[in-house]
Length: 224
Image (cartoon, rainbow, N blue to C red; front, side, top):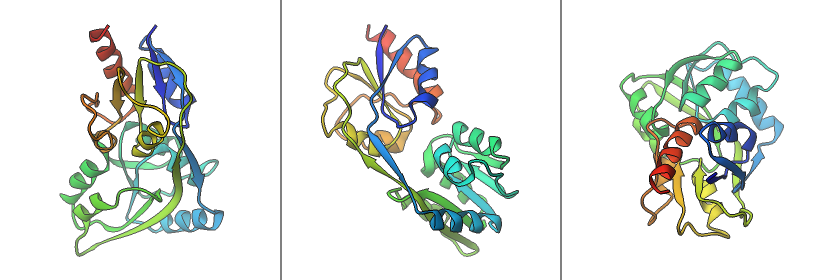
């Protein structure tokens, strides 16, 4: 059975998608998540109550802000299927689901300008560049840093492939390991861009571990 490194800190969420594809998921986390102080989380939740649109880019954001709580009844733009599912499970109302990361989601939303007050709870080290696509008169983007990711070196376990879900995980991997001889997958184009100089990179047509597992399984069959 071919082994795939799961580099997210949420192994239990991602691993089943790889196992069902006949791969053996191996926990090799390359990030550590540090949540913001409770007063910052409280401010983000309060701002969300009066937003015209919530911009949510990961299930982690939903868990941090609304674990055990119900999301406010405002429209949500979610960056992908997994994020949309987390929003719906928390009682939120998904208006738009992106298909290829924050940049594509911002491009989609730019066709609906103006957007009013957009509340964006995010990782502290998130790339702000895509937001320029929705920066217009009549749109106010209010961002809250609700967590930050810290790259960490993975263990030495042998694997045949590696699945990256964030640029921070890519950075963490390179703290102790190389990619020579591995099939490399990235959950979206933003993460793939962090793999500068390494080609090819398997990128699914939609940003989810389910889709990435499908593509990696297919690629590993080809490379067997």
